[in-house]
View 1: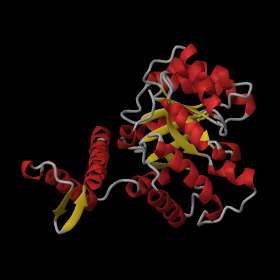
View 2 (view 1 turned 30 degrees about the vertical axis):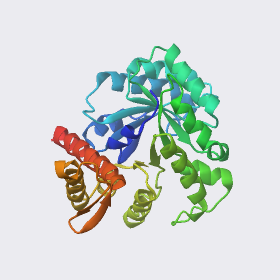
View 3 (view 1 turned 60 degrees about the vertical axis):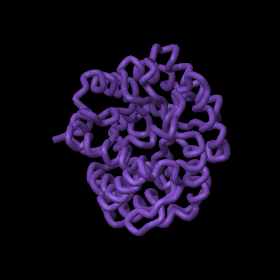
Length: 302
């Protein structure tokens, strides 16, 4: 189940956190056009509400109604009093993935994946890992490399930027300069081992322009999408992390050119006046795959 480059071709532009203790919010999530819904048992749930939220989230996932959206349950840390029971209950609910916070080492990836195995998780239930501590940043390569081990379920990294800011005592600047090393180290590790990777949240819900700027920065860096804390952030995020119409048109032209019989075996072509190499054909196939998957997702939501 190791992550592959193909994983990056499915749309994960927007991943909206929803508090597991709020039944109305979870019901509303079924009509929000996010690519993924993360039902949260960790940060959004008070300690005395953990067990009730667990039962509520798992019942909602079992009941379905989320359409083609990815449905993810974020459990509590493996080192918390609730983590292991969360994983057992989440496996029984059969989400698309279980998001495990505070992953610091490759061994913890194995531990979480093994817990899912012992709980009887089918092969299709993936593991996502929160990357949110200094130790995780330093171990990002080893954590990502765990995904290529037999039966490892890891397919996606999720940046926990608020926690990183807290842990390294940096300033939460709008341009995120203090976070750049953490973002890029983790991104490089994810790409080296074919994992999806999502950027962290933006806290100032009222600052729409600031959100767009930070989202565009994440897209420019190469993230697949962004985690969100409010439905108002979904539409701009979907737009920013989707290929433009011009990119899709160009990509289809590049693919068609390289697949033309008369160009068989050629490594460089001129397409619409621009030079294109085989690597551009690979990029084009990914762009078209993402665009087609987005179109399918949006058609299903209508």
